Length: 278
Picture (cartoon, rainbow, N blue to C red):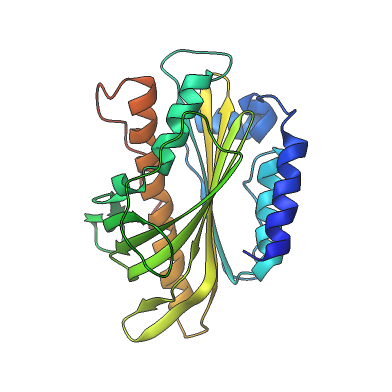
C-alpha cells in the first residue's frame, strides 16, 4: 500500500485500542445475525463501481476497507461473511486464545494443500499448491512461519504462493491487531497471469480478512478487490476465482480456529459452497 495509507492505518490503530468486543447483532444487524446463525454465508460479486455491502459495523474494519478502495479503485469486489461458533459461549476471547488465533493466521505454510469446491468443474480442487513465508520480496529465501507471544499491533511479512489459478507469485501480508479484532491484507507484489494474459498487474490486488470477536461467535469478513484488465469475460473469471478464494480462506480459518479452541481435536466443519447462481 501507499505510504500515506500505512500512516493513516497506524494512526487508526491507536484510536481503536479502546474499543471493546461487540455482539454479533451490533456488528451485522439483527437480520444478518439471524441469517448467519442458520448457516447462511453470503457471497457478493460486484464488477461495476463496486462498493462494500457486507462489512461489519466495526470502526477499524470499515476504515480499512474504505482506505483500500481509495488507495487503488478496484474494478471488481468479492465479499463474504461467516461465523465460527466457539465451543464455549465466552463473553470474549481470552488473551491466550487471541494470541493463538493470531499466530495461526501468521502460519501461511498451512495454506498449502487448501481445497475448495469448484462450481464450474463440479469437483473439489486444490487452491494453494504451495505457500512459504520468505525473508523479503526480492531475495525470497524461505523462513519459518513467524510466532509471537502477543499479537503485534502491526506486522508485515512476505510469502511465495502457488495457486491453481494464477500460478507462482510473491505476496505481501500486512497484519493489524486491536482489542476484539485481528486483520490481514494480502497484496500481490508480482503480476497475476492467466496463461500469457496479465490479469492483475503488480500491486493491483487486495484481499482483506477481518476476524472479530462476537461473544459466543467469531465473525469473519473477507473481501477480495482488484483492478483488472478489460478483456471480455476476464472479470467474470476472476470474480469466480475470488469467490473460490473466499471459500478456501474460510475453510482454512475454521481449521486454524479449531487448533486454538479444540486443541486440534478434530477437523473443522467445512463452510458451505457458494450458490451456483454466483
